[in-house]
Image 1 (cartoon, rainbow, N blue to C red):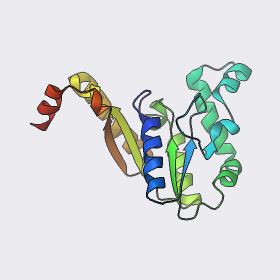
Image 2: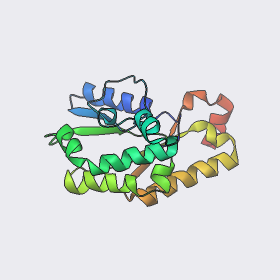
Image 3: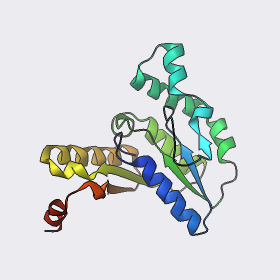
Length: 180
């Protein structure tokens, strides 16, 4: 999870490849009903249940209201999710989430989703919050990013790892400053 463009899908794809190379059984779920392309093939794709494009066209919602509707629709159709998850027993499930941070920080629907994963499907759930490393260049952006990550952790009530992404875009001088 994390803001749009923070590298969530790249992280998910890399994690998936790592687990597969480690001979672990892993599945990847696309939880973004607005996603258009992937560098991976999702095992489970919310777009098979509902798409943001359809919601916006049929209900005349904007993108944020439409996204919230998609998640509420998913929560009302947990039988679909149960069918998709099947018998994942001891498998890993990586979930690629949308980039609207309001879902993690302000609205209870993602907490409800995490609770379903924990309580109904008996998954051990941990969040990975991706934040672009460029946020450290500007103090205001950095504090905003840290506060968003903290808000998500409190709202979701799950263990969370905060991850700075796109470190390859940070200059050598900035990396040295970070090490001090």
